[in-house]
Structure formats: structure tokens, C-alpha cells
Image (cartoon, rainbow, N blue to C red; front, side, top):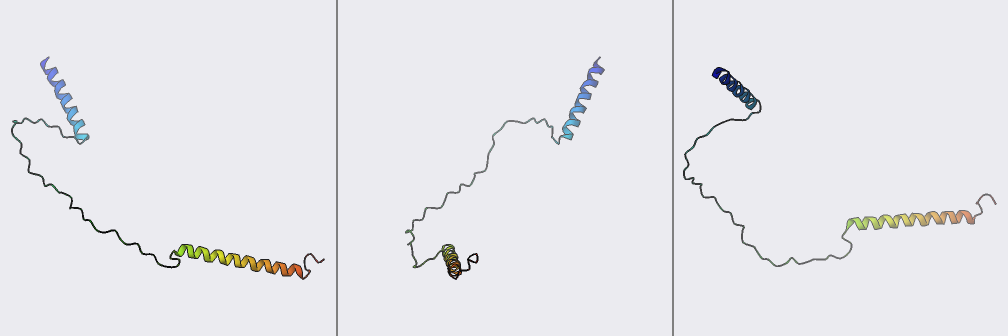
Length: 102
């Protein structure tokens, strides 16, 4: 009877060891003597002291400095000019009596 129990315990131990080995888990039993643990002193980093400086001076340049706004304005003006030119061409064409041959 003792041999059967010993065999069962040994079988369970082998299965547990194979499972632990396949899971990459270390199984260890540690017996230690309690004692004092001394940790090295950690360095403490303090932030640098704040530096106070005067506020930057705002500088404004004359004219349009934003190239996107300038390009948008130029394109709008160009489209308006082209529209007016096309409208004038149609006006002249109608005034000459070429509208539908009447």
C-alpha cells in the first residue's frame, strides 16, 4: 500500500514538474533565516530652481505676413477678374446681336 501511495506521489510530482517546465516557470523552495536588510541609499534628484525672466516683447510687422491669407486673396482677386472679363465678353457678344441669330 505504501508503494502505491509513493508511486502516486511520484507520478503527480513528475506531472507537476513537466507542466512547470513547459510553462517556463521555476519552482523553488527557499528556506531563509530572517535578518536585517540594508538597502543602499537612493539618490534624490531635485528639480532645478525656477528661473524668472521678463516676458518676451511682441513685435508686429507691417503688411500681410501670412502667406496663406495673401495667396487666398490673390486667387480670389484673380477669379473675380476672370469672371468680370467673361461677363464683359458675353455682354459684347449679346450687344452685337449674335444671340441666337435674331
